Length: 317
Ligand code: PMP
Image (tube, rainbow, N blue to C red; front, top):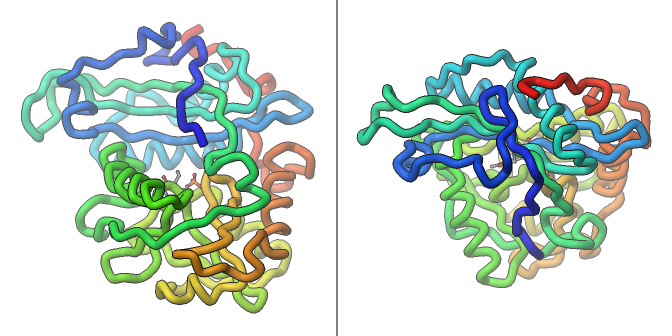
C-alpha cells in the first residue's frame, strides 16, 4: 500500500493558482511549529457527467466550523471556497481525485498567541486511489485495537479537523502498520470504542446497524452521516449507542467509513475473525448504494454531487 502523494500542477492559494512546487510556507509558520491549521478531505468521483465532488457543501461547512472553533476568521464565504475546490479540480484537468482545502496560520509569532501571522487558504487536488490498499473495499482489512487512545473531549476539539490532532492519528496508524495491521480502532478515554485513525466505525449485529455516538472523541464523519441516511432509507434498524471493545469481536459485521476509506469492511480485529471473515451482506448493501450514488450510477436523490464542469467558476483564474 502506497501513501505517496501524486502531484498535480496547480494549487489554489488565496484567489490565485500557484504552481505545485511553489505552494510553500515559512519554516516558522505556526502551521509548522504547532500544527496550527485546519483542513478538509473531499473525494471527487468520476461520473458520466464528469468529475463530481461528494458532499462538497457539507465538507466546506465543516471547514468553516473548524475555523470557528480555532478562532480563525476567513476572508472568504463558504461558496467561494467551494467554488475554489471545483476550480482547482478543473484547472488541473483531474477526474477522480482527492481535494484538500487547508487554512494555515502563517509566519510572524513565536508564542502561543497567533496575532501577527497571516491566515492563508489553500486548495490542493491530486489523484488518489483506495486508501486501505487494493482490494480492501471487497476483501476487507485486518485491524487491531490501538494502545493509543483518542484525546478526551476537554483536550482537543474532535469536531474540528485540526492538523495537530493528526499526531494522535499517526501514532495510531503507525503502531498498527508496525504490527502488521492495515488500520487500528482507537478507544476513547473512557475505554469505549471511538473511531479509526481517520475513519468512523460501524458494526452490524442481528441486522441492526450500530454506530458509536459523536461523543467529543471522534469526528462527525460525512461518510458516517451518508451511511446513516442510506441505512434509514433502506429501512434497516439503526442504533447509535456506546460500544464496549468486546462488542467489536462479537459483531456479525464491522466496517469503516470515511472519505478516503469510503466503506471498507473489516474482516478481523486483533486476529479474531469477524462474522464470515469477509464483507457481510449489510455492509455490501450499504457500500453498493453509497458508491453507486457517489459514482453517479444511481440517482443523486440527496443532492450529494457537485459536478465540476457544471459548477466550476474560475475563482482567481
Ligand atoms: N474520523 C477522522 C479522525 C477523520 O480524519 C475522518 C476523515 N475526515 C473521518 C473520521 C471520516 O470523516 P469523513 O467521512 O467526513 O471523511
